[in-house]
Length: 420
Length: 114
Figure 1: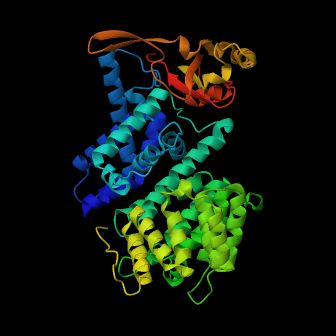
Figure 2: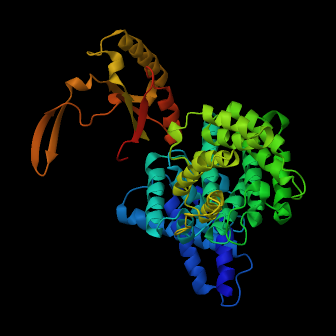
């Protein structure tokens, strides 16, 4: 069990140590390598039964020295001065530095990893690797790509950051909105990936917790940014429902049918606290409204309470004014069907030009559901066929297939679940 | 750091010989932008249209001369700047101010070497 104690230390302290090393060395790869070297040293020298009293400080100190050694080797070998790091490469300096206090440089590191000049999926991977200390194996599993592909992506991202001159500072006021948006959209992409597969027991569950942790860290580091608070709230709300998202057969349970008693109350409490800190004047920001939608659902205490469709519809109505995209429109139609009836929702659905949405699964899913409830069986079956062909997560497929098969009643030619 | 900013626009907006009223308009904007850049500007130029481009292509040791630009695209390279900027964020802020007539893209590339 000692190895897991060490691993836990490496993981928990890793983000802060790497962040501090990055601001010291101004180079991601060197910071990462130095930290790995310190971990390897720890495995050699830490006694087999315990870890040092302050393992993080130990690791930081060893990593600093390893980094300075590497810099010195580079200078001697290549005989060129390092542009980004001058004059601070003596052992004395390392010793003098108070390694017991690891400065919290994570915010800076988050902004570096999530620079808009880095591809969005690489940003997420890089932040999970460096800030959360998630092993590449786990990130690769969450992204459903081979580990070597992920490693190449990380190498490319680090090289881009170094070569393009991404600043190693927290962005200036003038760049702040763009840069913060890049950070938040990175977290959104990362969380969506982990949330896609409702299964909740596989690698995705751990991965989702890392993204949750990252959103919490960001909210601690930027406690007055409304969109940061809103995103932290949204992720905490969404994650609180994970225990209720699947039934015993591994089939997706739609939000209105989930048993609120199975939702994770402490996470809901944390989420609500984040949301409560968003000032009133910021209530109409799209990310704040998305979090409010989650809050409305999570306020439901039991299945006996009616689902909050009218409130949900009201938020979608205002969300549509600032963020008019297909996802918002479709979700609003789902609520509209519940509040104003199938006919009203169908009329609005048909007014939307669906040609551009041919491959967009939610478009077909909403259509299938409206047709099914309107009793237009044959059209509904076709629509279910279209959405099932587009959906890849097993829980949602199972649910859709059951719905489609119920439609055919006699189940003359049931759609088989196939490989899921 | 030194960066090159490559300006891509639909050159047809400027007319066949790049001498219509649109070019007057954009040149005036570039002059103003140049003044704003001051010492950060290391160089740059506008280019004639791709109809005047000639490409020398080397493939498998053979060289051939072709009429036209290296690649056909909706937006063409129409000019470039060389600038000095402390980092990518600074280069991005400068790139955002490069004038374009309507739609366009500015590609930011650090120069190789120190």
